[in-house]
Length: 247
Image (cartoon, rainbow, N blue to C red; front, top):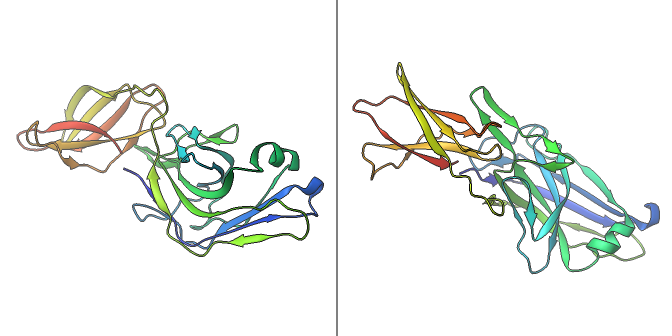
């Protein structure tokens, strides 16, 4: 299970009368070092998401990047050297009035968009500016923005540790992975898994009996675009039983 912990968020959100048409200016950054829950440093170009969180509806991010209870207004793949550099985002005043004036608050999330492959770890690309794969999302700072005229107003969030939440499965999800074949090659067992999706990471658990398949291998692979992924485990004397897990 991948989760995110992020440290040292400082978010500045301001309404400026100097922006065109009183547009909303939102500035955010982190002090670092920001990490995933496995304590590894956030990869360069990892995404920080500026979120409009609707009141009364818990915000959740699904594994395929879809959301409920709010909207990812900006996904910024800007992580560098374990932190989010200063990002300034302008929201059109008309859009603010129509969608974001009442009944919600602005928040900054760190997304875990890692893809795990046999050749290493990469980051999933954005599509139309939105994430396509989210293992987990952790809120790293939040503040309400008061829409008013006059001098700019700012809210600063003190350094904090983010609460990490594993991404939900998309609505209507029914793709259950299944083992298609098992091949023993030398000292390795290659488990071919079908019916996977490219926005979830899969791992194996093993055990000596069908009732005791509990040891997680912690060597995940993200589902292939063709629905197939191969998971690898060390060969055990006497054999082993396997179960497929979402990582």
